[in-house]
Length: 420
Ligand code: F6P
Image 1 (cartoon, rainbow, N blue to C red):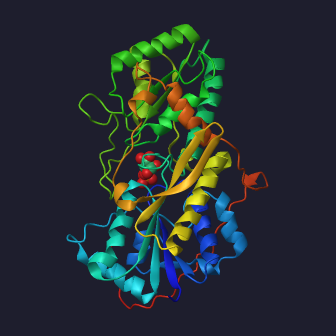
Image 2: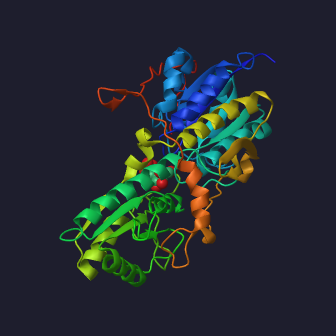
Image 3: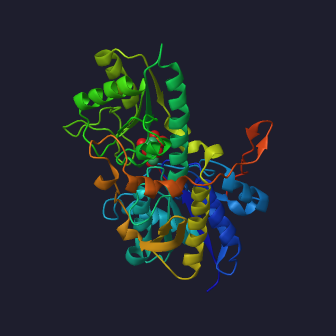
């Protein structure tokens, strides 16, 4: 078979190691010119394919592509855009075929979370239902760590490390101030439906009394009275209290404590702001002076504090996607398979896309302490390897020297536009 072109795109919330996967894809593709001629990246994910707006990664030097490994966020732009089912919007699929055929695209690599694996799964059906054969591989990514069938999701380990480090450092700060000033520090972290990131803060505590003293998980219904009793107890015993709260915290009716009132294209509620609500509660009901941080994008972009394990895994799933594709696999996602906890050993496996699309993996009950406010030893054993190792980017003038790609457009050959 003559070589074909590949389409690669980034989707959903970006991470500090998403570009490491892009690096793995492009470097591996360059080693398989017999199968893959060019890698075209979608500008802003699948939207780039629909708009015929693609980037020719072949215009980038080997050094620039290598620098993606240590550059955070999405070098080609990401998107929150959900393809509807074939029966609901055939025009979108016909447009994809039109664009893919015009650019001789035979491989589709989609780098994202659960919703994005759904997109990948739908694109894989182009061959089956619309007669356009395409090799379709999902590449896992999400700081939320909620993809099924993989030990962890690239992006999570680095966010986990950032959150654990910040909890330890801020904990020392509050401890210093507590005698005459701040008693409570609240940190809000991401994780819309699953509390993996909040759980990672628990790694910060080594000894009794260390931060965090309270973790609020989306998996545990928020009980204000039990929470406040716990905060008071911590202040009385240790002088201060550090609370880590997941943005996905819910009340007993299943409503988000903080619901921003808007939704994204995947139908997800826009979250953010539960931290200040919780902090105010401590002030109003217990009278404690507090500080509060919503770490928001800082936690998923902090490449300077990345976990080396995470970087290595992100790169490996990118490479594996290409290697599996040229070996003939289709409609699969490379996974991380844990072989041992200590020392951590892992290898790459694969799973059919149908098994991961739209499936969410939550923190299991045995990873949360019985009182609902902390992590168990089993959870610690699971999380600890994922934050191991440092992988600093190069620095220039005191700042990380990240790469900005040229992002040269692939010339359009179709005269038609497409509204998304
Ligand atoms: O998809 C991961 C995530 O980081 C969530 O934890 C968070 O709720 C969401 O993305 C934020 O998405 P956006 O950047 O689209 O607002």
